[in-house]
Length: 430
Image 1: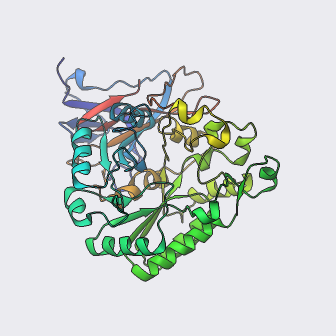
Image 2: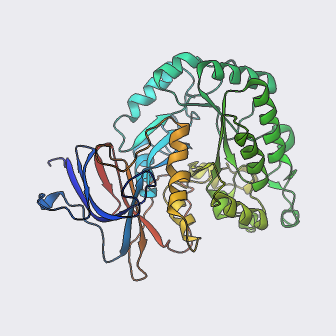
Image 3: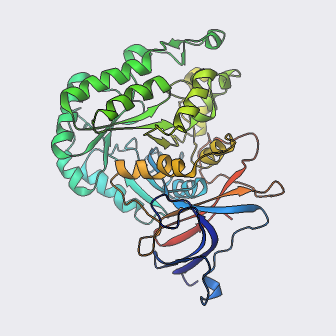
């Protein structure tokens, strides 16, 4: 079968504040991965170049700079029962992402140049762009080879979502990171505060009978990280914040000129603590769920104009052995790449596309030092297509992830990703 090199996307609305075609319905022609023409109406092209969208099930089709998830967990190598590069790529396409940052929590852990280059080789034929992240520390808990990793292409140094470094090793790592000009990613987990806790202290959680975590845990962790950063400076990224109070503290420091960044985990925009009422292990997650009022405030904060962070799907694939056990023994995590964003958009009556471009693409591109993917003639094509569904539509979404703990809403989303364009190829979800 001949590989298609040329594409024409008809009657799509460009949603890109940096494009001269922003908010305009146009035709876009792409040749061998580059945007060659944008016009209200293209003609004279080979009809086989045109990409068909399901016009019966979809209303307006929007095109945005490709969405970027700054950090997800995968499975290959070491945990292929959870996820492979192929399933991770297909899940990302289904969810609308063209680029993923891959956490180092694999087997072996990504903590040497050899491990890093091996992952680059394994992922080079993936349908989307996969950027491996590397561990902050080596097997002896000392700093990894920061300069060698940086020169090999590493963009983020992190030990993972639920990891903790004592102050001494953390300061050393941040100093190494500053000297090398690389970004350090850290969690808000503090084991001495968390202990065996599974939920925050609230009136609802008191009725569950589960061990609790002090409500101050996240803001306390943020203040600790800011103190360490004040001492070392450099580039620091928080992997997942879940409360408006923590976001306010972090953004206040960002406003002072500090080179800080942060993500909000998508599951925390979809659910709050009452999802645990039946002790369903699919909903076991760390950090714990917030109460309903805090979760509502978090959703408002993320879509406010002063929000400077980004969204991570917080994708953590797990196997049946990880989840089909009693709640207390189940592994934390949800597999959210497939449906998370469209489920989230469905919860909103309306949203600002300009803001959405920032929280799903531009802010993460800045952290990972990626091209802005401006939709303009002459630039490399890196697109996510997003369409609203007609009420009469019959589109069916089937998860592409092979994880056991795939999250999806109980009702069909009102938004749909027809496909993405990345690596000079259009990938359809049709």
